[in-house]
Each structure stands twice: as C-alpha cells, then as structure tokens.
Amino acid sequence: MNSLVTKEISDGVALLTLNRPERHNAWTFEMEAELFGLLHDAENDPEIRVVVITGAGKSFCPGLDAQALAEISASGRSTQPHLRTPMTYPTTIAKPIIAAINGACAGIGLILALQCDIRFASTRAKFTTSFAQRGIMAEHGIAWSLSRAVGPAVAFDLLYSARVVLGDEAAQLGLINRAVEPDELLTTAMDYARGLAANSSPAAMGTIKRQVYEALESTHEEARVLALRHWLGHLRFHSDFKEGISSFMEKRPPAFAPWDPATPAVPPPLPQD
Image 1 (cartoon, rainbow, N blue to C red):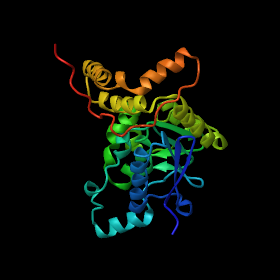
Image 2 (tube, rainbow, N blue to C red; image 1 turned 180 degrees about the vertical axis):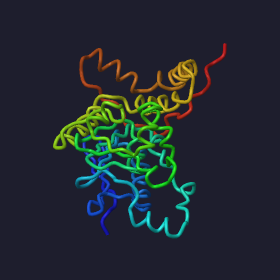
Image 3 (tube, rainbow, N blue to C red; image 1 turned 120 degrees about the horizontal axis):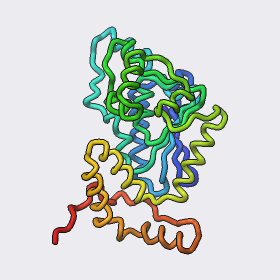
Image 4 (cartoon, rainbow, N blue to C red; image 1 turned 120 degrees about the vertical axis):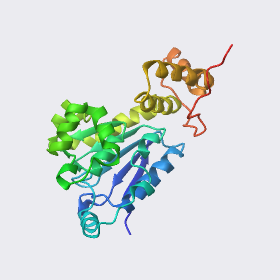
C-alpha cells in the first residue's frame, strides 16, 4: 500500500507530500493520522530543522473526501473530531512549517494550510472555505485562524460566501505570504526552507514560534515579559547564542546545533531580587 503522505529529507528540510493524486489529495482520517505522525517524528528528529507540506499532482487538498462526506450525511454519525489529534497540532510543533499550496485548497485543506507558519501558493491555486455551502459551521477553529490572517471583515466574506480566491488575490488579502508561478512554487518554498535551516537557530525559531502563537492571546506587556523569561531562562546560555555572535563577528555562516526537544516550552518565571 502506498503511503498517503510521503517524506523526503534534504539539507535539513523535510518535504511532506499529501499523496492521493488520483483523488486530488482529498482528506481522509488515515491521511490525517499519517501526516500528524510524520510531524511528530519531524519535531524529534535532529536532522530536520524545517518542514514543507505540499500536495502530489495538481491539488493541495480540496477538503474531506467526498465518499466520507456522503457517509457522514447518510448516517448522521459524527466523525468525533474531539477524539482525534486537533487540527491545530502543527502550531505546536517547535519547528517552522511551510505550506507550498500547488492547487485546490478548500475546507479542511484550507484549515491545514492556515496551521502552517508560512504559506506560499501557485498563482493558479484556488482557495475556498466551502463550509456555508455544505450547511456546516466553520470547522476546527478556522474562525480564529482565518480572522487573524485576513481580519474579521474578510473572514466573514470568505466564510459566508465560500467564494473562490485565486493565488494573487490570496496574497493581497494576507491569506498567503506570496503567490508565485506554478513551476516555481516548490523551488521557492524549498529554497526558503533551506535558508532557514542553514542560517537560523533552531532554538531561536522554536522559541519564536511559541512566542508568536502565545502573543495572539496575550497583551503587549505579557509578550514582553515572556521574551525576557525565555532569554533569562535558557537562551542566553544556549550554544546557538554563542554561535550566532561568533559567526557574526567572524563574518562566516553560522553552524547551529540541532534542535533539542528539551528546550523549555514554558520558561521559568523572572527572578525576584
């Protein structure tokens, strides 16, 4: 049986490819389990510093597989999402995750893309929320992630109308970071990822990722104090800080240590005099 998600590793980057091209990479719960399992493995693999997620063939992911949708509609049974790994799981992985959106990106496929830290897309990519046209709510927290990406007014437009947005408009709206020509997409995403893997500290990137997601729910002052806690708690003693300064002073590329899963997710409180 072919893997529903394939993995390739090169230059510190893991390329994970949704691999149901005959079904345009329509989402199944088996695919979900494979993808999240590979993300778990990637976080704990010192060889991997950055992850790129894309789709095989001409699509990224057009949403839940139609057969699964039909079975749910006919039976009325719940898919029990509360018992599955949350779709927000990629945001908890302490490594950068980049989406290379090569085609149709809808429903749960769009939810997946919004859980990635950075999004590149083909100019021919097509985005739609689809939920209102299926008679369901905005699933898996997309009301939160979409409104923070594009603002509430645009989020309402996209969620209410489920209109199709192409790559260039998606970039203008802030839904993605950049739209590029289809034949340049994977190269663009992989080159960017390799640049992070080669030049940015894994310890710093993992910490920054946590800071950014926590800051979405904090005050400005809380974000300032959290940064101090990370600095005083572990980063000032980390080898990556020493290497970052040394490589800058010596005018050479940095040689950062692999990501250490033991890096504190929650830094200690500020010391009290």
